[in-house]
Image (tube, rainbow over all chains, first blue to last red; front, side, top):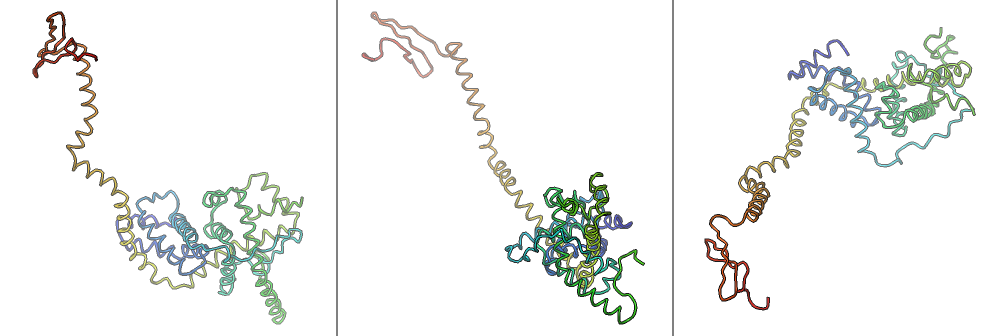
Length: 217
Length: 168
């Protein structure tokens, strides 16, 4: 927990609106990011994340500091996002057609790591990548989208995912595996195109520009 | 069985999430399987990129009104919550009001079984102990017939005797 979270919480509990505002400002984007990842609709994610903070305010007196404030807020946000998704669920027709069965014999391609690179600082300077990622995420079936966001953005462990989603730990692992595989399939084309562009640019510039994995020299 | 089928779902586990035996077996497999090593690299890349991409989406949005909107929603949420609490408490409140309003009737209703039980005890006791001090059993005999008459404050009551209607 950030050092002054507790101080802000204490002041907010005492009724100081500006202290609570400071907490909102501190975590609003993270809560929104989690909500957006789950509900995939910007306006709904906005409403969900605002509701999360309103609920946080209503239950501030119950916050004992056993977990970090950010963990608590994110948990409320993701709960509300999942609830919102259930309410908004219309039919599975909206979902992307299932990606074909994984051909394990073909082996992993490592295309995300080599094609996109894994240095967020470098890559995310390009808004295009963020857009591609969120678009790909939005095309995943709900259960795969949710588990990926809870795992990779909220940072839940297998145990926590098992509890939150009420599925056995083995199902958590296999669902995550399928979610990653589908995400990889959706990004493959983009990553392939990007790698080819980078190769071309490198050839014309006479130096290597293909994103390298962290640690490569 | 292709060993990748066993190990692929374990890829992406964090330290401590797999039993020690599985973690060691996975490490051994990754060292020997380029395909799974590539999958692991993808899982790592995806983990970082997904989080950063969603945050980038969030950062691209104007949040200048966000906290104001949150603070503006708090009073109405509080009122709604109080209303819900009021609604949920209403049946209990209503019952309590009814009890207060019908205190006498409620008290009598509550006492009725006890009073009935007390009356039964007194009646049985009186039956067992014979007539009360004001009541006198009188055996009346006249012209070869007899009757047992209970003298009460309301007058004589023939309990049994020859004056019962014939044929009964």
